[in-house]
Image (cartoon, rainbow, N blue to C red; front, top):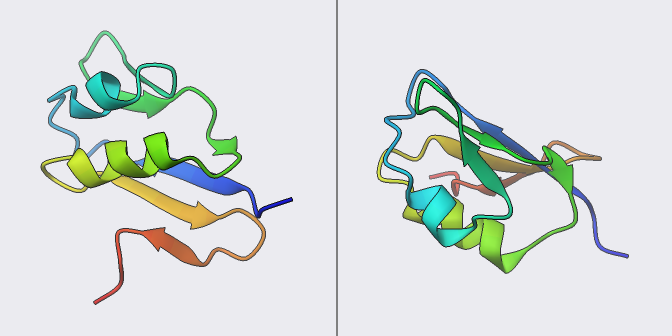
Length: 77
């Protein structure tokens, strides 16, 4: 079994573009303030979630390995 991921959305960065919802409608929702949030913050790794994070125009979505905190996205420079 693969390491679980922890998904967070930085609400200070989120501009409510909806790109994450468009790319992964089962994984992200926009609330009444048009701020994104993950449906399940802790989940199995998913290409759909990674693609949604990559599509965020302001990189507001971060993915880490739940057990270790190792960064999956955005890549560390």
